[in-house]
Structures are given as C-alpha cells and as structure tokens.
Image (cartoon, rainbow, N blue to C red; front, top):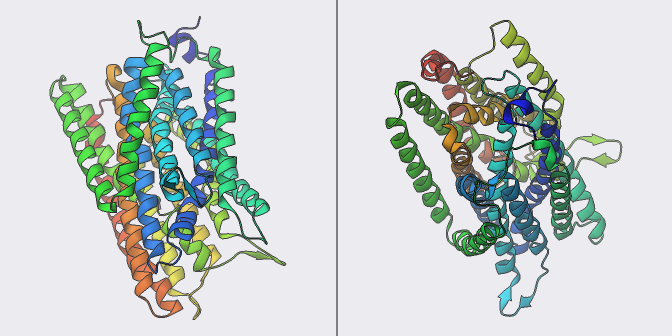
Length: 505
C-alpha cells in the first residue's frame, strides 16, 4: 500500500487528486444547483405576499450558507478523531442527499408539520452533511502531497476547477429541469432540488469506487475501524440537525450572533494553541489567524452572488439577448464557475512558472490581490448602476465584468487559502483548522446575508424603478471601498505577514 511519500512523489499529480476532483464536482453540482434556486424559491414560496419578501429570503439564505460552512470545524474533528476522512465524506454526502430530497416536499400538512417546517429541516440536514463533507475532502487533497511540494498549490487549483465545473453546470441544468417539470414555462424549483440530490449520490459513487488510489491517506484512526463510530456520528448528526433548524427558524440575528461567537471562540482557541508553540510555530499561527479574519471580509462581499446579485440579475438587469433568446437570470449563477474553469489552468501554470523564477507572490500578497478583485467588481457594477435606464435596468455586461473581476480575486484567495491551511496548521490538528477556515467563510456568509438584506430593504423603500436599482448601488458602494482599501493595505503589509510564515509558500 502506498505511503504518503509515495503518493506525493508520482509523476504529475497524484492519481487520487482526480478522484477527489470528480467527487467534489458532483457535490458542488448539488450545492450550487440548489443555491441558485434557494433564495428565489424561499421568497416566492414562503413570503410571496410580504412586501419584504426579498429581504426575508436574503436573511434565510445568508443564515443557511453561513451554517453550511460553520459546521466544518466539527466535521474536521470527527474525521481527525473518529472516522477518518474517507468515511466522514461518505456519511456527509448521504446527509446532503437526504436534505436535498426533503426540499421537494410540496405544499401541505404532513402529520402536523407544514411544508415550510419540513423544507427548513431539509436545509438543516444539508448543513450537517456539508459540515462533514466539505472540510475533509479539501484536507484529503493536501494529504496527497509531501510537505513543501511545490505542486500543492497547483493541485488545489485543479481541485478547485472540479468545484467550478460542477458549479458551472448545475444552475443551468437545475433551472432547465425545473422549467421542464414546471407548468406553462414557470419553473417548479422542487425538481431542481431533486436533480441536485441525484448529483450528490453520483459524487459518492465516484468517490467510493476509487478510494484505493488514496493509499493510506484518509483511513480511520487506529482503534476506530468498526461500525460503532459511524453509528455515533450518524446519531450525532440527527441530534445536531434540530439545532440547525432552530437557528434557521429564529431571527436572522440569532444566526449572526451565533457565528460571531463561534468565530471568536475559534480564534481564541487558535491563539491559545499558538502561545503553546515555539516561536516559529507561534508566528505561523498568528499569520493563519490574521488570514482567517481577512477571509471573512472577502466572502462577505463575494457571496452577494447567490443573494443580492441573484435578485439583481432577475429584476434589475437588461438581459443578454441573442435573437429571440434571452438569458435566464438564474444562469448568471454559472458565470463565475465558467470563468474559474477558463482561468484556473492559467493561474495554476502561472504560480508554478513564477515560483521557478522566484517571483511567485507570497500568500499574503495573493490575498491582497484577491481583495482588489472583489472591490473593483463592485466598482464596475456601480458604474453600470450609474448608467441605468429610466426603467431601472443595467446592461448585462457590467454584471459580467463584476464576475470577471471577482473570479480573478477568488483565484488569488480560495484555492491558495485551502493550500495555506494544510501548510500552516500543526499536523496534529489539520482537520480542525481546515474546519476553522470554513467557519471564517461561514462568518463572511452571514455578513453577506445582512448586506443583501440591507440592499433589499433599501430597494423596498424606493418609489421608482430607477430608485430601486440605485438602492443596490448605495449598499454596494461600501463593499467596494472595503475591498479596495483592504487589498491595498494587505499588499503593503504582506512582507511583514510573510515573515511570520517562516518559509511557507
């Protein structure tokens, strides 16, 4: 059986990377297909007659996406201590599929439970499943490489392309299938959720069929090989799900304060770990904590995509039209992913080429470039809003430019950040620290939901179509300032942060 060193020394990238590529492709097909429809479905199905439907749906969406990432810290600990990465990924995938199929429940009353209650419990199962699945498949990628292997960043970028192939296909496929199963051209989004769940099951088949290619990586901890630990995790997930349901059912502030508290507790815990390390390990942990905080802010802006920008594409955009065909608003959820697939190989090759010349930007510098991309994207959409028609419509190419800039920014942060965690975290707690990375994304998502709600509330108060689109601009302006300002600041300070990393590239 292969050892870690053997797996990491194969010609090219390890074969196991491509197994994880396809497994993650289908899991992300599941997630992003559901995500593209989620806020629109909640607004229409549960708040249809409410003038603040968009704001309430934005809050629910933000709470869900936050909790999806938040449970990653527990999923990492489960893998480290109980199941190993492989079995945790499979259990998480089964929870995800079950949650997707529960979203299909039609309107009605079921043993005293209403459709909305069952729908939100389905979201709770998705939250539990993602918490088990997401951090561990990313950690397993890092385990395929030896320490300081220069191919690791490129491997994570290839893996990240798998995420985005799935994310590119799913909004289009799920919207088309929902429309096909709908009535008179009106999509029935429940069937989009069904197709997403089928994608998750296909991903699990891809993963389990080729686990032998991982060598010894991802196996259960010694003494935890039997069925007992699996049963404990399944029962634990079923106990945690009602708690996630309760948070989703309470006010948006409940999720917000929960996430702020969780991130604060994790940051303090990591600081306590840092102070028990020697100087080199301590400063690496300081760098990691700082970059986790920056990651929160980046995703607060970037994750407007599935929320405020989704509603924007449906109601405030002059659509891309070719002949008699107009691009559906939901399809804009695929644009970022398509651009990742196009640009990802270029970035992967560029990092390796620059590294050979000694000119590869440091990880902190890449974070700064990522913030610039995010901030300039909102500068671009605000320029379009400034040129909106009297009917309150913005030309489609301004939204395309936003997604191009956001994609360039994302490629500087997200795959690099995943790789960074596996390098900076102490080996004994890699899974938990990867979970902390996803909690930082979760905190950014809950802030993103609040920003989207503010945009929706401002839009609801506008009395004209032009005023409604300008309401978005009034909120996006602050996100633009934050992105550009932090980008410049991080680039200037990157030499200092890089010293704390002690050679980690």
